[in-house]
Image (cartoon, rainbow, N blue to C red; front, side):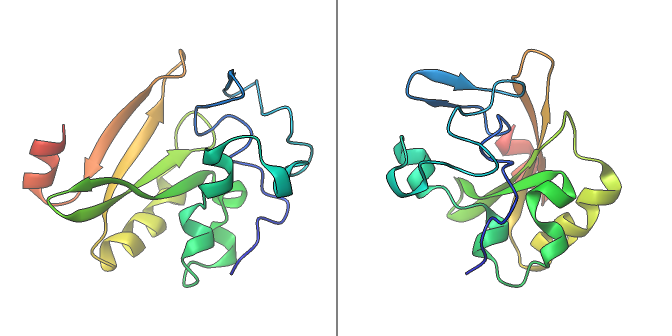
Length: 141
């Protein structure tokens, strides 16, 4: 299995989670993130212990797609739709650049995986855009 290495994209506020009552948002990273999780063996929340980004889970994804390198986190099975897994592509910055995301989108679609692209707004909420067959796009919205 792949390791995070120097990547801290999930700990620095890109997933918009709450750890021990503190909202982890861009500009407010997890207090345990110091070049990696300092409590990895005793993680503070279930979400930390259970979350594995799609890049780590998919051995076929190349190393250059690690979240800190591509600017996006693949969230494996973020949703379910009509019995199908729907992955999320969540930006590390405000929005994923098309040239960086296109290869990942093409790859996920080749694996018949549905996808939701996210755009983070200035108030740290997200807009989500379904990518896939028209029925998925119209019913997911």
